[in-house]
Length: 267
Length: 331
Image 1 (spheres, rainbow over the protein chains, first blue to last red):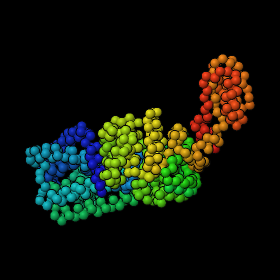
Image 2 (cartoon, chains in turn green, red):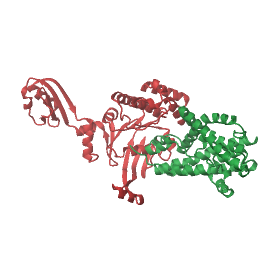
Image 3 (tube, rainbow over the protein chains, first blue to last red):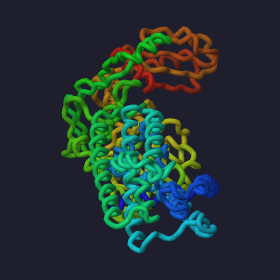
Image 4 (tube, helix red, strand yellow):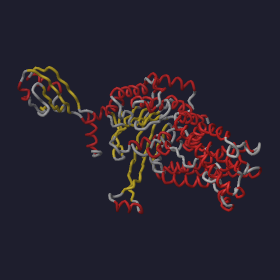
């Protein structure tokens, strides 16, 4: 366990080296969040009744999304891991007394965590200072807070477990850019990163909820805003757990079969 | 103890003819050629031995090292290292070996070297006291000092290699695999690295397996060499024996004064190399099987006043080239 914590630590340290990137990222997210809210405001003004959630809840959703973008971004892949397969330096990692799946998983979580840690606070503070209903509000209820945290952690794990499948595919395809674009588009759309899931027609929503992508950012954010609560929230958490287990198992099997036929490039 | 028995490994490589039409055709039907990277490779290496594993590019050196370090799984054959099959007990095996790949880096690019070391400490679960002792020892031996606090990306190649060595040895491995460890290094760093490897082998009894194209590395470090070519072990023996077998020929370089008729020295076995000689300096090729060195020198000294003389054998590079030629590989 200690070695995985240590990975987290060094990734954190490495992440802190890029301060300019953190500032630039934050500026982008303020701007993006603001624009999105302005756009929804226009729709809301024209017909508040056809809105599936209140403007205030939507604002919270959007600011959470911006603050924790790094945790759930579906288009992010660690270039270091992908390169290590293409160039063959993964050979070094295979010479370590560690499980490669676990090592990559932690590395990936760590990148996401270190980026989010640097950026989330300023965005949350800024968003809390905005006028109502465009500001972020507190969690919908007292029990929503711990459920939100738990669901966030599971959401991060689901995102990472899903992206692991793409990383492992690098052993087969070497250039994952195609797989990555496809995976990113699908993840962003079905996870509610572009349009929150409640905005889709009812029958489509049911399809969305049956897919693993709803277990990423949608579940925690909707728990915060109160859109999902009570037993429904527990059900959503159970769904996250099921998908996490399934993705971990699939990744583990995939990794094992990939390593059996591994060819280390060059030299 | 390392024991390999009848190891085979085949790679499938996609091949196609040049041209656009062929490229389109390859979209639908790929043609593969099987390359036999290793055929029936067997050898045994004892504890504390230093072995040079040589062969031309593409001979199968790296594949063998990757099998021994547990990265690759062979198609057939047995390999037992310290009582374990590397690819079956990869993690347990990995804790006992160290690897240095001269062309790759294991240090984290952006952070000071010491942070990478601490990560390795946790990965290998090295006890704090052992870690400290090892780090101090390696720091002193390799002259790391200030380097430890520098980010890896700002180190020169020589500095980085020294850090790579330290990184691979923090967990006190019993076996060290070195894959072209001196590639691209300047003369000073090369010598430092060689001294270090020698000291390591002598003081800690670490088994060292060295693959390289730098024959000076081999000459300076190993007693025993294993030659691989075309995926087969061609030769396994001592370096000295190999040199004897291959070099009865010596080159005599004589600097002299007076004696204009040095060129007149003509005996069986001693020939003047006209192209390399000029007045005052003569270069002879001597076949020691036909004429001993001492006889040749006395013959030459009769004809002129010798001011300086040097006798040199075939260089190790030349020995290896003639060895490759003998087996018909890589040339």
